[in-house]
Amino acid sequence: MSIPAESSVKPLSDALIADVNQLIDDDRERLVELFKGIHRNPELAFMETQTARIVELNLQNLGFDITTGIGTTGVAAIYRNGDGPTVMYRADMDALPVEEETDVEYASKKRVTLDDGTEVPVAHVCGHDAHVTWMLGMAKALIALKDQWSGTLILIGQPAEEPITGAKAMVDDGLYNYIPKPDVLIGMHTAPAPVGVVVSSPGPRLAGTDQLDVLFHGVGGHGSMPQKAKDPVLMAALAVVEYQTIVSRMIDPQKTAVLTVGAIDAGTGNNVIPSSALVKANLRWYDTEVREIMLDAVKSVSEGIARTYGMGEDQLPEIIMKGGSSPLVNDPELSAQIATSLGAVLGDTLVVTESPRATGSEDVQLLKGPYPDMPFTYLMVGIADPDVFAAAVARGEEFPYAPHNPNYLVDLSAIPHGSKIATYAMLGLLNRD
Image (cartoon, rainbow, N blue to C red; front, side, top):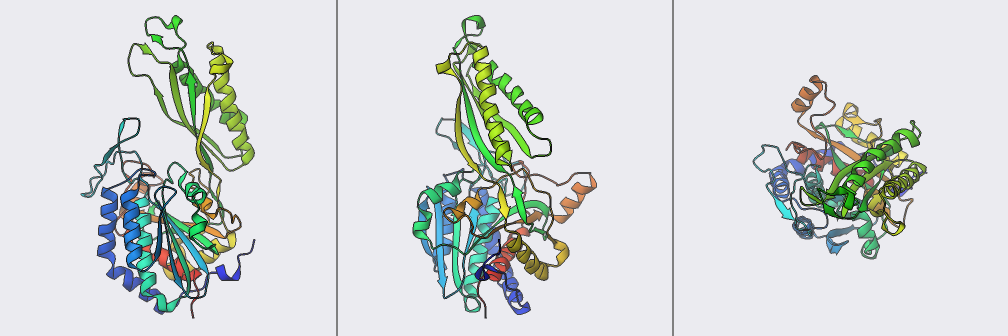
């Protein structure tokens, strides 16, 4: 599909590049402190009230029209600057229930109590704190340069990317009642590559995913008399093992498929057999046929185990679908044009145009909502200290740390750099004389 002329990427002049660099370099101290503040105060999915307020106030002060509370905590901001393309940019805001293990002075110490009463640590170990800061840095630079471009900016602060539910929540809550139809959508994500590297690759990039719970029912009893009970913990344990045969024996080895169990919740005491056990799983796929095979097999395996241990047809496991997303597919033409534009600014050696597709997932593409043909691309931006990255490679490691790892660390030099990348990309899509 060819992208419309209004969505094509225009080259940036040396003078404009110099203006962007100067503006963001001058803003570096503010941006770094903004990032540190968000990092210290992470918020879980649909709890991002403080982060959303930061987005709201920063963009309001720049003259954007703001709508808040979309999809619970989502923010949509519009800046109209004459005729030209309408370009939408998204930054996700949520953190993860992970305990940070970095030694930086602004590390998160935060813990929150969930609705079920459990207390969990919270940390930004996927870079969403950087995503928000990059967007705010880009917004300030674009407004300072508004005499050099025309068009409409739509900036989105999105909740709940981690459970893969936030983009859909915003669309379902009427996002397009508040914003005009964009001509193009772009987003960016941190990657544990060296600062300076940007990946702009075409086609399928990230896998589709489903988050699902499997609730096994049983009959509770005393641990000393298992014959009087029907043990859902055993059912859950067997299911976890048998699920692993689904990918290895039911899926074409040449197709992508991942089935991971992230948690089992069951029981409270050493000598009590509980009446239920909850298995939390996620699937990754690119082919919808693979998805259906995995979903059908999870149901079949779970029900088979329950029947084996004497559960009636009215007490079979419940499959609870919690959220999901389609594969993320970059528009080939848009991706290539942005790569060429960024290569002219950064140098071609720092812009990667061919990379293997990953089994991680995203939901930014679901913001297209009723406009599935909207041109879209997603950039991966390096955030690792180059020396730290080089040391990891010397040890035979692919990266120094992975997203969701307790030691995931955005080097502070990546904060202004990411804002520059976002600004270059947006300027390339807007009208300029």
